[in-house]
Image 1: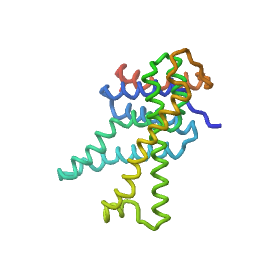
Image 2: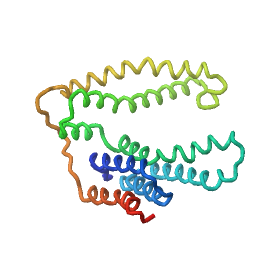
Image 3: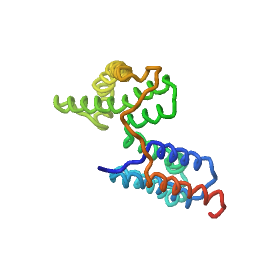
Image 4: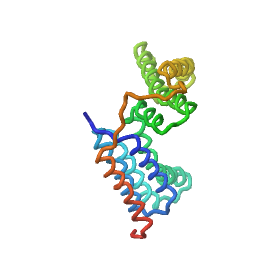
Length: 231
């Protein structure tokens, strides 16, 4: 079974990514931060996600330091600068967010929130929202499979050629299912007793491991380097 970090470690990494966002860091510290935040994907054996993020970040660096200095056309300069510089500042938080959604089960988050005595009006909506998007994505996949089964063209080319038909066959069914899915998930959350005012227990036992503590210390390295003025 692949190892994945405790939710508290994920929240700590998210905090680190946001602190880095507000600090005046060099490109060296930025690269170190991204590497530290991407490594958990490989530790958790999610190699595809780790490679995807690494490739996207490498392309952003390539555009920022190789392509942009040689472009004088404002039409190309501004959008490329937004992708290479603007979005690049957000990528540490996006990395941790992807890890939190892909590899941390909703039950672990709910167990943590119960342990921290979060109010019920936060836990119930969180449970619904956390499960809503994976369910909507599954509905989208089924709609695309149904379109393929009926010989209806799909994909970016189909959207360019027939945008109205694409919206009709994809967007309308998704919107119709969205309200029903949200209602079903809310009923499911309430059936599990998340809104009960009494003290609740959880079948999931959260436990910090040595790897969690070690990695939390490693995640502090970029901030220590930045505040210490080493780079």
